Length: 195
Image (cartoon, rainbow, N blue to C red; front, top):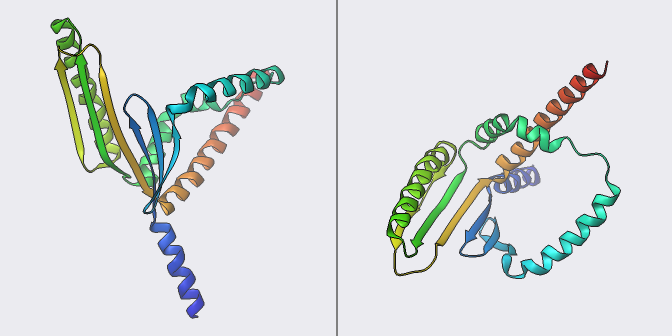
């Protein structure tokens, strides 16, 4: 009986452990995986040129053997709203903490900087309400500035999305069920068209 209680407690602790990913952009992209208190760096764009050359060589070899395209990209484009609704329903408000966006427009033309400043705030005004409706946002820093003394645009962005392991498992299971349903529906409609 005690072993059963211990197993249930361990499974509950695993189910409530937070999983997430941190993305940082400061001229190069860095991704970190969050598993509870641990943070593991997945990729950094410092060695991207070597990786791009390897990927290009691999993709050339793969495209020679491929003749039939996968239906998954088409399914994703056609049903992205259903998938987004599924994610928000299953995860029930994952946490987005922190959300940091800092943009500085630079250049010689102050009018162009002012126009870009307005466009940036318009974009933030559209994106942030969307994020607020789908995530619990903790710390947020949104800053757009114009600096005529600098020559170029500088962008710093950082976002960390976390959810519990149980939520992620439910998301994967629900997404698989949705994709299988959509795939069957697509195959049935293709057969109907062929007849």
